[in-house]
Length: 324
Ligand code: F6P
Figure 1: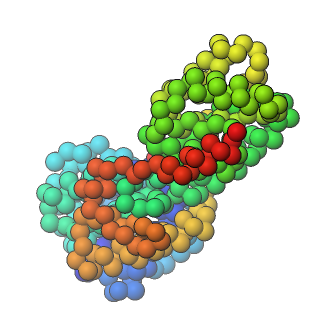
Figure 2 (figure 1 turned 135 degrees about the vertical axis):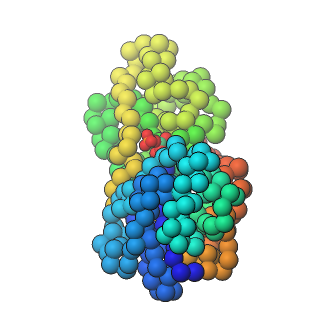
């Protein structure tokens, strides 16, 4: 390998910078010239590809976001867009690519890799933790810690006023952020898309906890939950219980995507970045680098994009027991 390009695509996630840094530094270590692609796949199409060196990634390991910027490229979804990208890849003489992102990022990589001769490896970077083939995705640990910090604060005011809060967290179609942060913040109820729990379940749980004289109640709702928006849930609770609960709604939103990556995310990013470059050097292509039981693990893009990671039933059980 002489030249490897690196890009970040899809929703940004804390730890992406640490991963870019690891890819660039590994390239330099192995005498490969690293190239940074700006704005995800759009940057390949627009030829926003520039040479990097070890110092281009200094002082970024602790920063959220991505210095390479990110995008959800519509043009790259077309054959014509990918043809343009390929021409720029040839012009810059890149002989390998590391793409950091989620599901959509790997689908894009698969399409490009099937039409043109370019080895690509992927690093899972998304706060949602919804990628098959890795224990954790980059950004998940930071995002859940951000949620827990915010929910702890909400608990203070909820208790002072004896209120019932509905707190919506991100996660797209997955409930990993909700389950992990719900357990850690001691929430009374967690609603996630993976569990078929309708609003009756919530009513029952509120009745049960009422008997225990709770002074505050926090319900964590994953954005993909089947019961719809948190405002909808609030309305249904009001309709059912009248004035029994004073309710409030908080949608945490994009605050979950930013911030300094945790130590866990920085270490994971560094490991995956080094492994990505080494995987290319070993001749691997079309694979995502993740970890399984703490060890580096490779998953074909095909599998990583087709399968969904399973919700951990043990966590659900724990959440149920400790929230009685
Ligand atoms: O995939 C990460 C994520 O933050 C999801 O949790 C959320 O549904 C989505 O991206 C939001 O996307 P955008 O920032 O484009 O609004």
